[in-house]
Image (tube, rainbow, N blue to C red; front, side, top):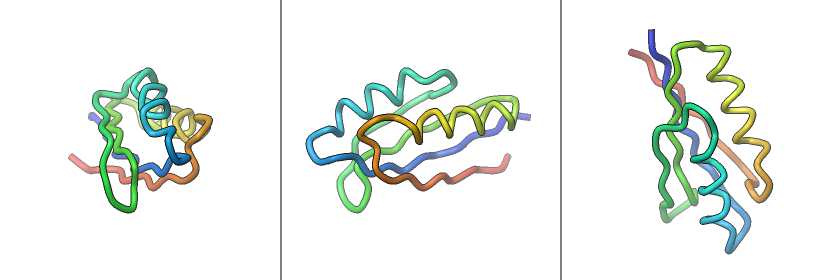
Length: 76
C-alpha cells in the first residue's frame, strides 16, 4: 500500500525558496511548490511504509525557517 501526505507550511518571510529547496531534498518527497495565501508552500510525500512517512514528516517539520505545518494524509 502506498501512503501519501501533503504538508502545508508557513516559512519565515523571505525564506520560502530556501525552505522549499530543503523540503524537496528529503527522501520520498515527490513534489513541492510555493503557494500564496495562508500557507507558503505545499510538499507531497509518497512512501510504502507508514513509519517512513512519519519520519519524513518529522524531518520536514524540523527544517530551519519553517514556522508552522499542517499535515494531510490521504487514503488510497
